[in-house]
Image 1 (cartoon, rainbow, N blue to C red):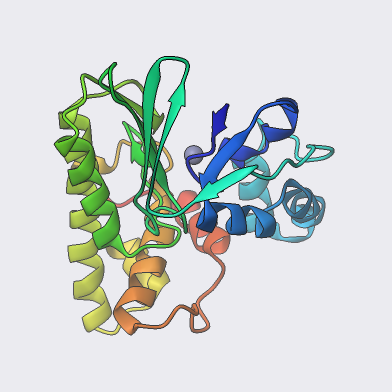
Image 2 (cartoon, rainbow, N blue to C red):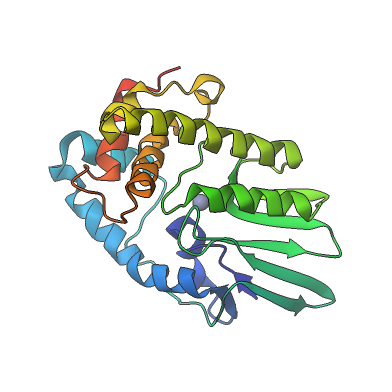
Amino acid sequence: MLVNTHANGDHTFGNGLVANASIVASAASAAEMEEQTAASLAAMMRRAPEWGETGAYLRRIFSPFDFEGARPKAPTRTFTSFLSIKVGDKTVDLHEVGPAHTAGDVIVHVVEDGVVFSGDILFVDCTPILWTGPVANWLEACDLIAALNPRVIVPGHGPITDLAGVRRVQDYLRHIDREARIRYDAGLSVMEAALDIRLASFADWGDAERVAVNVSTLYREYRGRPDPAGEPSPFRTMAALAARGPRR
Ligand SMILES: [Zn+2]
């Protein structure tokens, strides 16, 4: 049995390798997986050489991956809100906490062991990326992890962590939300805001340029509209920011 905590390819493109497993995901994640396929990323990477700075950035960040020929496998069981399953003698509670990082984030609580697998609700020592939002859901998801009082927390990225790691992610999200709002109210574009925001103690986290996506998603939230309103693609803004380096 396999749980996909969310739809992103770094968590789902291996599904085809466990042909006989039952795969559980939230219904929202299953729907998002149909859109974000390995085939679509493979097609994007074939075109990357035409895209200058953005293409070079894509080739760099995706260099560990080969999307060609990844065999898709959709979840075999979906749920909304909450599902408790038995795996052997273990109770495994699945809490849907999205939309936050993506449309259908799930955290996995192995109750008797006191272990939480947070999926990408937690990035430890690397930069969280807010693809979907709202940010309030992500902050609440962190509070839920804390309320489960786990002994061990396995993040989506980075080393095993504890409640301090959870609070650090909340600190980052609150910092970016506060700083983005100021610049939104002042009329700055996403790119201008992303270039202007000081990352302070978060500047040393890997992939700091993800602040560009985080600002873009927060702007959509502030506008109350899901469309990007003519903003450049997230990969273009990240590429530009990565070339310049984060503001400390
Ligand atoms: Zn991930």
